[in-house]
Length: 99
Image (cartoon, rainbow, N blue to C red; front, side):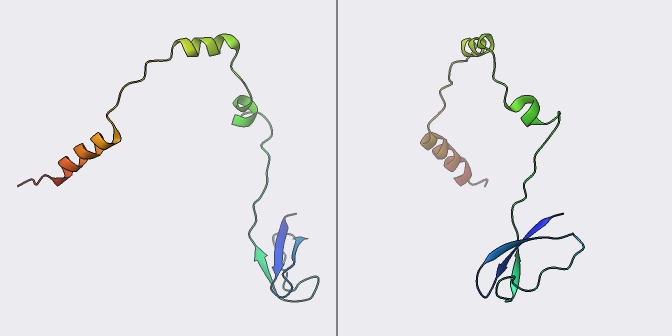
């Protein structure tokens, strides 16, 4: 059964009610009998079994030999034009009139 959260407009207290999906919403506070609003809350769930990223790949760390191979194959950083140079080039292109 889902758990729904409500907040009282009169006393401001929040409370939870375990209700079926087809049950009517709670209309009054369980503490002061004032009007209530249904809150939207985060749901929690857990992925169980195989086939999910968390269970199959998420916690695995590369072996020492794999990490050495990766560091030796790192390529040299390419020198890109500065942000200002790229911006000036963009402005020159956009400001030219086609006529």
